[in-house]
Length: 197
Image (cartoon, rainbow, N blue to C red; front, side, top):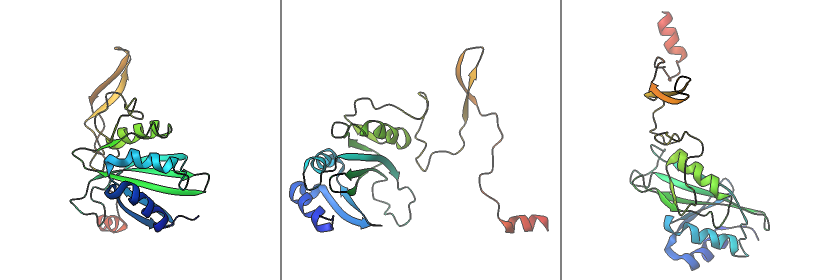
């Protein structure tokens, strides 16, 4: 049975009601928009129900919609996106839960799919999305003392401190940046022509 809006939306709405915020198709793949507090229950149903049988969680990633084209200003800034695969039916499905900047919290799905463990840690580290109930939610890609979340669109491209290994202290230290600020905006041919006269 192929996935259609009807075969996805009707059984999910019948079971979860208003927690299913919408179902849409884009580029041949279906996305289910779900209320953040219901993520775990919906994921467990998508795994256990034989008509869906999404046995595998392929990825969990964060999305930052700050200044996103045509995105409503009052909509939640972040989203946790789950990519599911049914090996039994050869189906893929995307599940998205939007969370506000003030409280970017969704329940962890580590007990549904163990593969979510490191994916959720990565989304926490890069975007600051908190996965409530995660057994060990700590940074995975940045330093232990790192401040901020580097994939947020408002994260500064140039910091004020740098780190280096200090052989005298025999540990990593932070110090003010010693390099000159760089111009990160590429020059155009017109700017070069104007400067050349």
